[in-house]
Length: 65
Image (cartoon, rainbow, N blue to C red; front, side):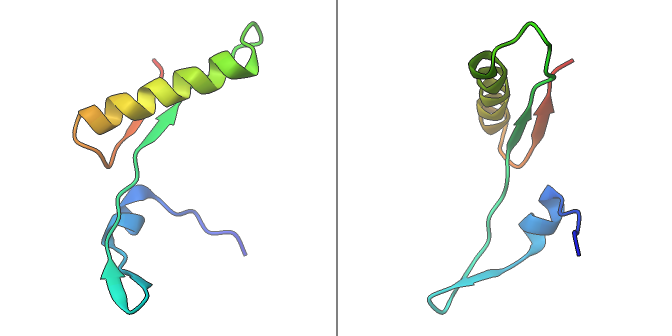
């Protein structure tokens, strides 16, 4: 069964690793695909937005306008 997991669910979950509790956050960059883009350009746009989200405080989703 597929479940939608959002960044708040991840933020509020305690992961166990080698007996230690870890808390993580997720920053996601989203780019709209345009037929004129090649795959490297498309991924590059998403990556730029991910880093912008990290600069703005992490734990965010940044999308193209």
